Length: 192
Image (cartoon, rainbow, N blue to C red; front, side, top):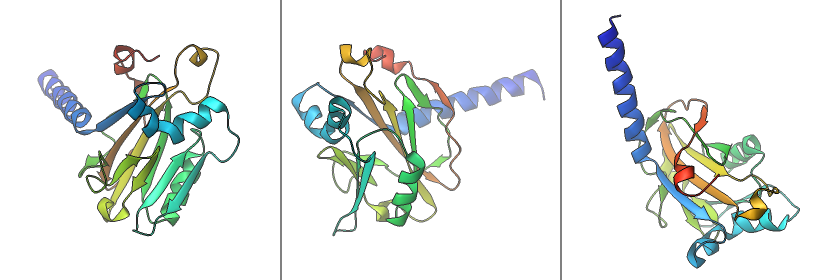
């Protein structure tokens, strides 16, 4: 392969990565931030801040066919995936540290994974949890949810609010494993 062809392939890959990053809808929530954001993040942030003992997460099937997930601690992602599968949701759950993210390009994207309100995507934030509509995921697609942030309170995080971000995408077919890379947007947002 000629140098020009390799350069062209790298350029195409970079463009695809940028397009993918723009497609991914990212919700940034800061515990201790604006009142609306604190209310939305309560189920996620409060147990980590208070050190509440109990399960890492809860999965509940709602009467309208949606599935509710409440995360108390960033652990047991594989078991959460299995529990979601039992509830009818094909999902890939990944927890990464603050300042990191999964490299874009984990598969062919299609559809809206995270919406701002019920019915605007396959999932949406509500009352501190994530509601998922399995009917909006569709056959042969996987809901990919990436939680990035402070996984536990430390001496460093006591000096600032716990910070986390939820990113989602719908992937058609096989989902590639997460390759963890640096996320420079955390520095721009005042994160670690």
